[in-house]
Amino acid sequence: MDHKRGNKSDNRWRKLRLASRSQNIRNSKLHKNSTTGVTGVRWHTKNKYYVARITYKGKYIHLGSSITLQGAIRLRRAAEKKYFGKFRYRHN
Image 1 (cartoon, rainbow, N blue to C red):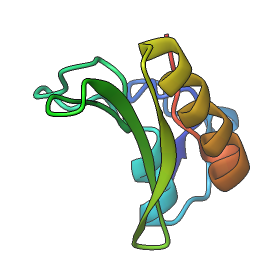
Image 2 (tube, rainbow, N blue to C red):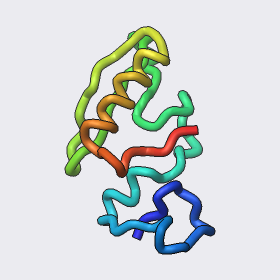
Image 3 (tube, rainbow, N blue to C red):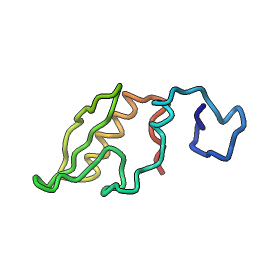
Image 4 (spheres, helix red, strand yellow):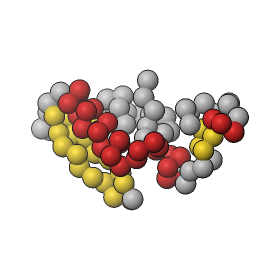
């Protein structure tokens, strides 16, 4: 089961949906060690740009790079919509 909006304290049936383990993990919270504050986007210190990637069916997919954080975020959000659909990450 997955909480549609990520609110773990709201267990009403209409707020839940069937989901596989991998689908449920897709809308989990951001890791504490994130340097950019965005899931799937990191800063490449050697080359001085942001890199976006996504994991789908156990494989990393390189989405591209950008000199701006916003550009990398756009790449990531578009891929989430394409690969994850309604199970994509919830953003504030």
